[in-house]
Each structure stands twice: as structure tokens, then as C-alpha cells.
Length: 466
Image 1 (cartoon, rainbow, N blue to C red):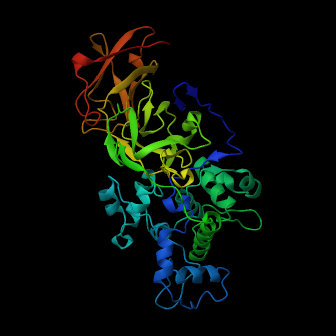
Image 2 (image 1 turned 90 degrees about the vertical axis):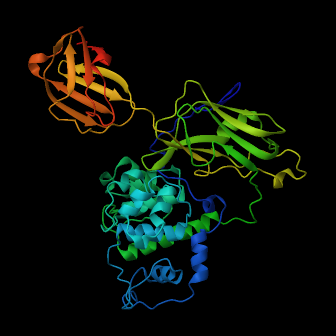
Image 3 (image 1 turned 60 degrees about the vertical axis):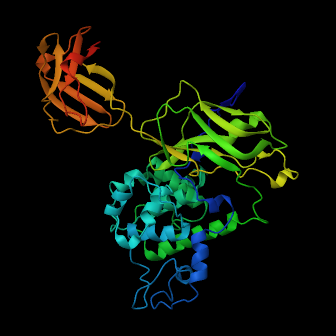
């Protein structure tokens, strides 16, 4: 929820069936500035020759294959073949996509991990893809780069690269017969690319999302992606807006404390609201996102915007009741049609360019591991919930050794223990079941949970209620 002093913005809910927030990460600046991707611009200049592949003369993707070869985006083999029916590996697909997107930033704390996962021939492409939000955390930990990329994986990466946000599922659902193969997020990725004509199905209504994508199919999807940029993002004239930012606090890519409440833009000049804007427009102009599940999603934080015309500062203040999540990446965006330079003679040429997704990011520091709640969910199950995900320590045992549940001075027998996400679940022996309305305590010896312990003197109390 967003608010400004004495103004409240109304949140509207929309039906997911008609419009869904896409699982897109932020689009690179070329998407917003209505230009061809810089990587593609460079390829057009660099490559001016073409090869006549022996095996594509009668192939349905001949024109797209030759176009991408001409631009240096896809290449053939030494025997003058392209092998259009051969599957594209995940490593190959990601490298080619990054030749088009050409995102150069590599600000990531996972650089060492990425270098171990991906082969050297890919260069900086994996780090750039991760920094751009095209590659998600969950993909890193299960990455098998030599495995063929599927059609839905390519659609997912292209959707994230495109910055597509509002996606209708209606057209795709009315066409495709095999959408039951897709998860909720995959439906969004597929619909985004289907609506733009980048991902198409067979004449009899099948997307074949889990099918490995061939080099010919991949060339066509990449070509359509480039054409979509050309058609949708070229405008008349040049961008008039300017970047008036002097400093950002916190700075871009900073590590911030969980208690941080204020985020400030310091401008080079005094700023004023655009002619047709007033203070009530500011809440909708500013958004806070968090990076979750491989995409930017609304953070759902309540905040106020502090701004006075003819001054050089704007501050976003979180409500005191709001808390940032532990070890989470956030970004703040600002629309480009709200503020102008206060003293400029031509206001139309002195508009603030705004802040796009990914241009003002910061990550919260890890909080000290602590227990949020202890609850007996039934008479033989005790659940300990932590403030963040936990891992098994060196002294963890699935039979509950070094975990102690006490009824007064009597220790109860434990049958099993398990860790999942941020919870430690303890299963008691049936002969030592909990009694209604009785008080109990629990404590953990060192390193049952990695980096954590509860001394017997600090045992946590809980009550079982049947």
C-alpha cells in the first residue's frame, strides 16, 4: 500500500484470469528508451557477411537463421551446416539471449558460485543474466547447462528480458490444449510470449512447452523477440527527459540494515511537479519491489512520500509498522512524467527521466538467527519457527538427539526431527504425548541448527492446547 501525507492511495484488485502480474524481472534501459538493444546494434555493425548453410536451403526457418547469422547472434558449424533440428543446450540459449540483451552490469554476490556452475566460454553472460534478473536464484542451484533447453524455459528467459508486466491469459488459454503441463508462473511466461507472437503453437493447438527447443525454433523465437522490440519500441524523436539525480541514499547496490526506514533522492536542481500533476499523483509514481522467486514483485509496503516543491530532495519513508525482509533485494522505481526542473524555462524539456527497475537496488543484511514461535500442532508434534531459513548443523540427527523437550524436570522421548525452510519439526514418542493446557519447554544443543543453540537455562516455554 502507498500513501502520502493526508493522501491515501486506493489499492484495486484485479482478476488473475484477465490480467496477471508477470514473472518478469526488470527490463534493460533500451526497452524504456524505445531503442534497439545495444548488443544488437553492435552485432549489426560488426558482422557484414553471411554463410550459405547446406542444411537450411529448404528449412521453414531459413530466413530467420540467415538473419541471425548475419548479425552474429547465432553461428553455424565448420562443415557449413547449421543443424536446425539439433537441440539447443541451456548454456547456449542463455549465451545467445545475452548477445541480444547486452546487459553489462555484473553486481552480484554470487559471482564465485556462478563461475563454478558455468563454463568459461560463456564469459560474463551468466553473471550479466543473473544481475539483469533473467536468471533466477532457484535456477542456479539446479542448473544443468548441457541439458537441452525447453520451449518454456526460453519463453521464461525472454519474458524476464522483455520486462513484460501485465499479461492476459485469455487468448493463450483459449488456444492451447496443453497448458495443464505448466505451473502458475510458467503460464504467465508462456502467455507473455504468446501474446507478442514470440511463442506460437501447432495448428492443432499445442504449445509443447516441455519439448526441447531446436536450433531452428530457437532462431525463430529470437528473431521474433528482436522484431517485437523494433515494432513496439521505436518512437519519433529523441528522449527529452533528463537524469537530475545527484545522489541516492542508500546508494545503488548497497547493503542496508533491516531497520532502514528512509530512502532519499537528492537532485542536482530544485524540482517541481509537472504542470498537470499534483501531490496526490506521487503515490502512483513510486513503487517498491522485492526480488522473489526469480522476479521483481510488489513489496506491499506501506510508506509516505515527503516532497516540497522548489526543493532538491524527495524521501520515501516506510511506516514504523513495516519491516524489511531479511537478506532480500529491493528496488524503488519512479515514473518519468511527474517532476520537472523548477527553474527551467521549457518545462517539457526539463522533465526528470525517472528511475527504472534495477537502477536503484539495495539488499538487506542477514539478521541474527532467532526463533519466532514455538507451537505444539498436536499432542506429539512441536514446531519451532525461525525468522529465516535454517540448515542442519553438524550435531543434527533425524532421531532428535541433542533436542530436548521437557515437562518440568522430565525429558520427553523424541522419535524424529526434521528441518524444512524456516521450521524445525519435532515428533514425540506416542507414550510421551503432550497433555492439554500443560506447559512445556524446549532447548537445543549447539549446532543442531547450523550456527544456533538454546541453552537449558534459556529454554523456551510453550503450552499445548488440544
